[in-house]
Image (tube, rainbow, N blue to C red; front, side, top):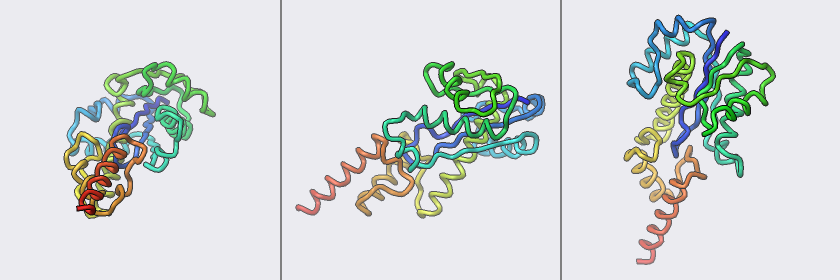
Amino acid sequence: MICGADEAGRGPVLGPLVVAAVMVEDDLSLRQLRVKDSKLLTSARREELYDGIMAVARVEVSVASPEEIDARGEGSLNELEVQHFAAVIDRLAPHKVFVDAADVVAERFGQNILSLLRCQPDMVSCHRADSLYPVVSAASIVAKVVRDRAVRSIGEELGENIGSGYPTDPATMAFLERWTRTNGDLPPYTRRSWATAKKMYSICKMSNLDEWME
């Protein structure tokens, strides 16, 4: 049994980080689905492939909430990802696993995951694995779909257009500013430890103070 693992949502200021693992006997079924790196696919195509992947593979998902991300303290985001990668891989107990390395030293990322596993699969950890191995492409699709659905759910809960959750998304930044100015605090599901969030909070608080003084 071979497994691929990848994440979605490492960089956003809003919403969770999602790690997914996909396991199959061989990757023929995934090749037939024509999976590829999720970043190269439209949202609609990812949803189609998600259903196909779920039909032919065993899938495990682990979600790191914004609160968990903020609570890591002095620990790095890589360390948190290692824990979640290990969790989904252990549930599947594959013979061989391919992971898309978050660490600049790809081999170190794989070894750190292995150190937490009860199972001991052959480990292949490399950069751009989601473009090289269909099982990792499939995992990247699952992780991205799960995260996108979570972000949509957050928007529906808050009754706002929150965009994608990334700092580069104008809709996300407009939402952050609007909510913080109106409510005097960052919105729920914000990664408060992110520099983007801290800066937005500071700017809005200063602006509100200036308006009050006037």
